[in-house]
Image 1 (cartoon, rainbow, N blue to C red):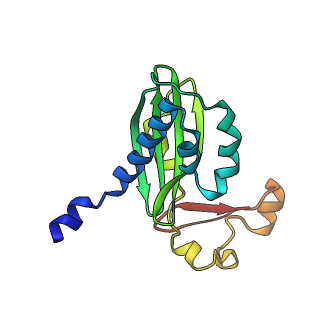
Image 2 (cartoon, helix red, strand yellow):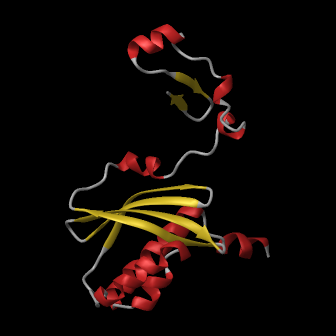
Length: 164
């Protein structure tokens, strides 16, 4: 029984790739209903607008270069055919991966850009409510007036944060 459950469970990256393969098959067959169902509720109205443009493209071939999953969010970099590149963000909705948005380009996206597509988890500073009043100014009042700007900076285990 344990093997059956474990063998059928998909890891998060495989879930993302499964959506991408469904999208490829829907485009190949021109199945607008399936294609639209792959999108999140938040993005469904934009996906519906594409329905009239979906026609069978049996020669469409999707490849991926990089995926990244963090919790309920995921990002994918891929390519359709020879000269159409895409970046796609996905969310988990009702236990399933759904497409949140996608961007097309005629140039490949840098592989490491996939990590910038999903914001990091909240660090200690954000979890504490971002208490800027407790962060010392980098310049005293006179120096800030002379420079024409003020700076406060802090960091936590996630990110360097600054404010003026």
